[in-house]
Structure formats: C-alpha cells, structure tokens
Length: 488
Image (cartoon, rainbow, N blue to C red; front, top):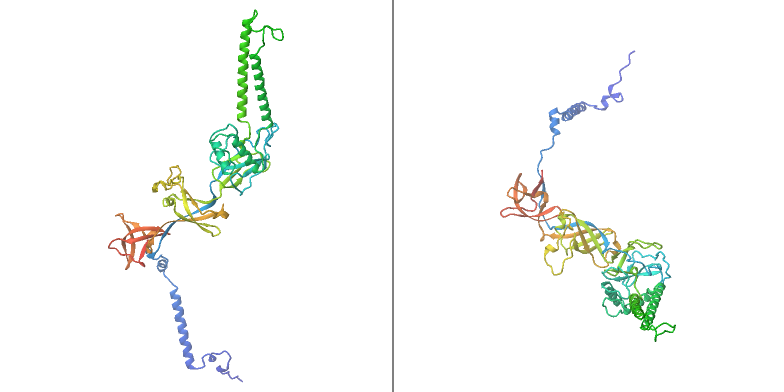
C-alpha cells in the first residue's frame, strides 16, 4: 500500500514558508534580478583597461602655487643668541714679592730667604672696594687701589713718577693725607701708608733687620772716613811728633814727607765723600715702603672677583684671579648682513632662559672704538670687522642692561631681539618669494585673475618675517585677497 505524499506546505523550511503566494514568487524573482544587476555593475566598475589604469595614476596638471595678499603691520628685527656675562674681565698678577724680598713674611725679616705661600686665597664672587685686602701671602696683605698705571716696582722714600702720584691720589681718596700730590714719595707719604695698613690690621713694611744693619755699617764708614780726614789734616806739631818723629817740612826728607801728607789728605777727603754719598743714597730709600707685590691697581672699582687661580698653600705665580666689573652685559654674534642694519644706541630686548625680559641698548659692534661725544656721523657708529678685512665675517655685538639687572643670570644664555624698523601702520604685504625683478629692473608680482596670470608692478618696502611691504605702481592695482604666485 502506497504512502500518500505529504503536502508541500507542511514541510519545515520549504519554499512555501518564504513565498507562500504567487505574488511572493514574483517579488523573489525581481529581487534576484536586481542583485544580479548590482553585482554586474560593481564588477564592471572595478575593471579597467591598462590604458585607463595608467591614466588614473598620472599626476594632476601642475598649476601655480598662490598666497593671498594681506594688509598687516610689519616689524623687522635682528634676533641672535647670546650670553650674559660680567663686564671688563681682567687678570690680576702680583708685580713682585709680598713683604721683604729676603724674608717673604713679616714687617721685619730675619734675612733668611723663604718661599712665599698663599695664606688666604681670594674669594670667588666677592666684591672688592678700593683699599680692601684681596688676599694674603705669607701673612702679608695684597691690597687693591684704583689706577691705570700697573704696579711694577717697590714704592718708598726717594721714588718718583706717575705711579707714586697714583698712590698719593688713592691715599687721599681713602682719607689718609699724604701731603702734596707731587709724584715724589716722602715722609708724609710713608706716614699715610702706615696709617692705611694699620686700619686694615697690618704693619706697613718698615726697614728690615738687614736694612738697619746696612744703615749702621754705612754710618760707621762715614765716621771712620771723618776720623781719617782729621788725622790727615793734623799730622802733629813741631819737628818731632809725640812719638819722636820729625815735623813735616823740616829735616832731610821734608819734601817727600810733605808730598805724602798731601796725598793722604786728598785720599781721606775722597773716602769721606764716597762714604757720605753711599749713606745718602741708602737713606733716600730707607723707611716705610710699599712692596711691589702688596698693591694691585685696577682701572675700575668696585670690582667682582671671578675666576680664582690660586688656593691656600700655593706659590703665587702668574695670574692669581680674574676680576670683572659688577655690571652685567650681554654678548652675541650676528651675521654680517644683519650687522649692517645695526648701530650703536639701538634698543634691544634680552630674554633669559627662565623667561625674564629686560630692555637693553647696543653699546658696541665688532671692533669699533666707542664713539666720541663730539662726533655725529653714522660712519663712526657702524660695525667693523675688527681689522680682519673679511666683510662677510660674523660681527660681535654687546648689549648693556640697567645696573643690577640679570646679575643672577650671569653665565647663562639669552635671546636678543633688536628692532631695526617697522611699517607705518598696516600695509599691503606679500611673501618674499612672490617678488621678482623683470627685465626692466622693476619689482613685480604675478597675480592670478580670471584664470589668467598677470604681472603687477610694485615698489618694495620693509621686509620682515618672510613678508615684504609692497605698493602698487601708478596705474596698477593690488588688493588684499588677491592671490599672488609664489611657485609652480
């Protein structure tokens, strides 16, 4: 017996569940046709001939690169990187021994030669005033005075010259009256020196034991010469002296004796003259002195101690320290072309690494000599190449800042901005790259108008920050928003 087939609509997952009716069947057919068409379109859009593929990879046709004309203010500046430094650095050297050349210490040496040693070194960063003690050597002071003539010898009684006059002026400023400022060291100067040393807690360099011994020896020589002269002048009375000798001028050998007495008298006079000359010469330099190594003259005071080259226990040879002014300056180097835009007296802004900003002024350019107040020409203010002859070489520039400013920033770097010009309000500007010179030697810019590029003659002005001021020539037009060509 045959089984009866199950109705189609009763099977799970059968087509009837999807379409059910004749209208549903039609919808399925339409959707299927649509899907087939879409697939064909997609496949067709992704298919290219080799020629089409090559053409698709070609770069677009080049056109001019343009930038819009602007109306803005321009400020031209020279910017450089510099360093903050203390001004007027100068090495300090001792001109000779400190104290007695024989003893190396004390105000009255014992005559034994000993090495000199630093017993108190200079203090880096300290400020020294006129009359201060810079350091100690073998217990003796090295003092500081203001002056331009360097110490080069021991100053004492009998010395004269500009260095003595410089010492006398310094003692006067310090309040120790040396008497007349005449350039000759005399007793009033010695007294002033002694008072100055005493005010600092030291004894001035008075005559040493050796000096006193030498003085005694010379004085004794004078006394002996005087006695010899007296003896030669008074050989004795009568024909016989006290010892039974014949009186000069009588007896058989009277002529020879007289000649001998005359010669002896002449010799005694010469010996006395020489002894007196030696004593006078020694006495002229005998007394309180200023040893060559105990004073340092500096052109400017107060001064700041920078680098110190010796320490306690060292033998002071060569530079012992470097001193600077207490005033801070900023030094930088600018390209030669920028230096041509600068001159002495220009205002500058200094910005340190911590953001501190201080206004300054250009005081020197290159190797220029500071301008004399009576001169008024720009040529005397311009930069120089320092004598190198290379006009393309970078040029040093120095900026002064107000007293007391940036002292905490010494030895640090700083940015320097020097304003060299500005536009008169807002002006038309274009990029420097847009400006070109035509065959007639006139400046022009190319402007894109209506799909065409046209030349517009202009006059160029101030240039700054990659922009240049332009003014359309007579009959030409150029407006903000116009597009100028800067490249192709």
